[in-house]
Image (cartoon, rainbow over all chains, first blue to last red; front, top):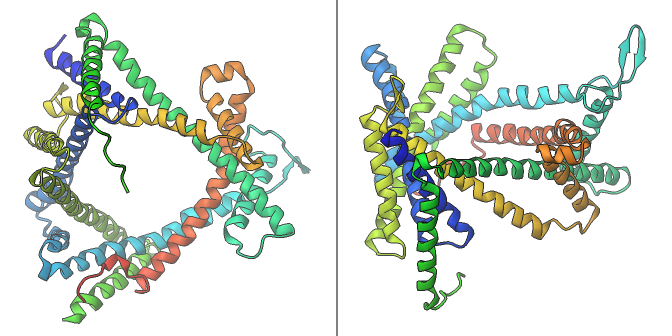
Length: 251
Length: 216
């Protein structure tokens, strides 16, 4: 087993266990891992930005290909840093104006095309099909393209839009439509919740799988040793906290 | 001077907004090239935004250390993690793997970032379950619908659930592909209408919050 892999297994196990200690309560081990996580993540983002932006997008095209037009975004970007000079802080508005202007301009036609017209087009589909010259209606629930599902989709989209956008008083037929919209929303929220829970469970299983693997003798029983150390440290910290008075509640 | 501080940014927004909205309707190679270039420009300018964020983070923790605020020692851990990653990352030119061999930067990614990130999100599973236990009481018909949908999707996403309730897999697919899709579609249409309206307000100078306050 290469040393760096062995060391990596021990570090990964230790950090995983430190984060899990939060399930007991907020404690120094968790805070240590949490701050390390922020530090490493920011450092990683800086290095990746350096590699992508400074080297690939600025240095190489400018120095190797002579594309000096890149001085314009460099200048605009530098204006953003003017925020640190109070007398020249207004210069940063020029940079923000450029970003927001370009972003808004790009958004308008693309959003209308991809998110409004395309979604409406996919919703307003034929509610019945013509098969061999005669109309037919397919009931297959598991086929999202079936006629029954086309009706359900149409009812769902229209009723949810009714609930959100019609600011008139919800009574009579409008109330029925809005209430149907609420039921559709509740199903979607429930589905989103269930989906999220299972995604988190999947991550949890992944971490536990790693802990089980690192508990093997070839990794020096890393998980078992570090679990013992973590529990001991947590118990010791817990004992030191007992004598201390509870801090005043926030707010 | 007031022109440069107030009117010039609004003029830049108006011109760039109209030009890039019009760009979509001009299928000419020059127009496409302009779009490609400006996309790169935005990436470059975005890099400077990272400088703003990192400076702010540095400042917050420097103040914490200077004032010896509770937990100031953890700020050193953050600095050490950040600076260590930057030095090692720059040493390896931001490459995790070179000639099939993992670099020290790759080691940091695989054995520090991935486990920390994975565990951070994994512990949310416990808090979501705890929150669900407290709030998932079917007090009304709507809450009951939400509860039933969540249970069906959770059952349908795991082999055990499908084994216990064979119908749950198909039902989950139907809920996600049809019922959920219809709601997502309606919400997307609503958000898009709002985004278009906001973009128009920004371009025509009605919405100016992005310029911030401060001296005129």
